[in-house]
Structures are given as C-alpha cells and as structure tokens.
Length: 243
Image (cartoon, rainbow, N blue to C red):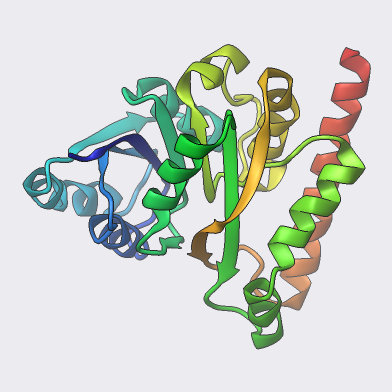
C-alpha cells in the first residue's frame, strides 16, 4: 500500500525542470498516496508536461491531481495545494529539486518514530560552484539549521524539503499569502508560527538534491542572499510586534 502522504509541488513556468522532479517521485522506494502539482499562472508548457504524467502515476496507484492558481504568488500557490491535500502528512518539494530514492520513506519513518509536528531535511546542491556543492554535501545545511534555531529560537523548515502534519498546518492558518516571491521566505514565516504547536525537527536522513539557479553568478547570489536576510529581519520584526 502507498503511504499516507500528500506531496505538494508548486510550479510556475517549470517546463524544463518539472519532468525530472516527477521522475524522482515515481522511483521512490515508498510511494505516496497523492501527488498535487499546482500550476501557478504558467505561460509555458508546464501544464502539458504535468498532464502527460497522469497515466504513470495512475499505474502506480497514486492519485495525481493538477490544480490551478491563476494569481501569481508562491505562498498562495502552496496554500492551494496544502489545503487540498487529503492525507495526514503533507510533504513539500520544489520543481528544481530531485529527491533521493528513500526520501518519502525517510519522512514516513520520521513521523512514525517521533512526536514531530513537522520536519525539514537536508538540501544538497547538484549544480553551481564546486566549493558550494562540497559544502552542501558535508553538512552545511544541517549546521545552518542548527545555528538559526539557536539564534531565532525556532526550527526553520525549507519547503524544498519538508513535511508537516496536516492537522497542525490547518491550525496555523497556512502560508502568509502576502508573500509572493520565494526569496521573501514564506517557509521561514510559517516556521515562526509552527513551533507554537509542537516540536519541529531537522532530520539529516531526509535528503533532496536541489539547484542553485536562483543564485546564478556571484553578483546574483549576493543580491539574493541580501534580499533573504532582509526578509528574515522583517519576519522577526513582525514576530516581536505580535508579542
């Protein structure tokens, strides 16, 4: 039997990357009961590619749904998928990510053996500068999550590799739909509220390979990093004013 997980994949103009992500789901050692692709105002062949995979998921007993979110925005798109999920665990991955074959099995095992309400895994870059790839392969993200946990007082999750109990997600009210760009950290904002409902953990056995495409060259990386840190301080400021 397929495991009780709904996998949510947001997609905006992902015609060049969606196939590899869906292929990675199809070869999982433990398959989910449901996969939801949300087409967020795509103007390329994203929809066509997603439709072409329906038969492959059906052959494996997976409910494969394609939802549409016509208003551009990452948080709104994730909410479309998360609120529509039918299974007790909602897993999340991005279109530029490639899960290891045991990815869903590791998520399922984590929830079976802990009291976590949510879990985030490790990201390993498969492209970009070799030094950055090396750092990511040798525990960079694990150390980053541990450090930010101590600094900010809560465990942050990455929607490129995470899973949440649906009943808890519903209690949070979902992602903040004022956040349009991934660089404005809709996942960090949700993380700041998740911890009030229970324990959130980082599990290094849950691994996803992902792209550095949003960082591009050195200048783009510096600009993106600065943008993300500004977003972090905006969210922390919001938290402090809500107390």
